[in-house]
Length: 169
Image 1 (tube, one colour):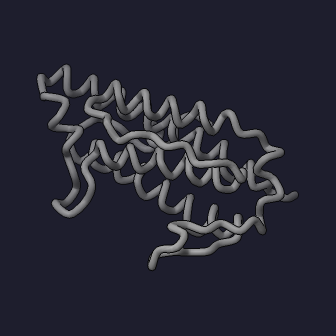
Image 2 (cartoon, rainbow, N blue to C red):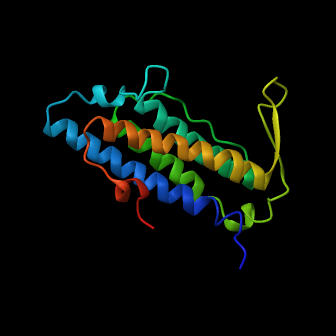
């Protein structure tokens, strides 16, 4: 049995973004119950040189939408990084999910050899095949940021576990 590019991408992004939305809801409830200003959690980070929770969520969404768009051969939608609270982050996740839901399997399947260029024309330019872009670049980066968001919240005392991280499958 073969695994299609669509099966290896869109359902994975949807599952993990659902988990991310769930842990953010728990974080918001945690802050309210303990009378913690939400900004404290939103700006929490694991180490000073790492992105804060808010930015981790933005970047996770960016990878989900950009990887899906590029392997589908469509323009990557631009989302302004203006989120300031949990509701804004939930809206960004919902907007990301709506975009990737708009992509059909027919647009993505067969993209294994599609030429993907990131940061074209810059010293950081990288050229990938669609399959290498998804499996060796896009998914690892996406998982890094979703995992780091989870770790920040867990480290901050929010009662989340692996089941929350994984979301529904």
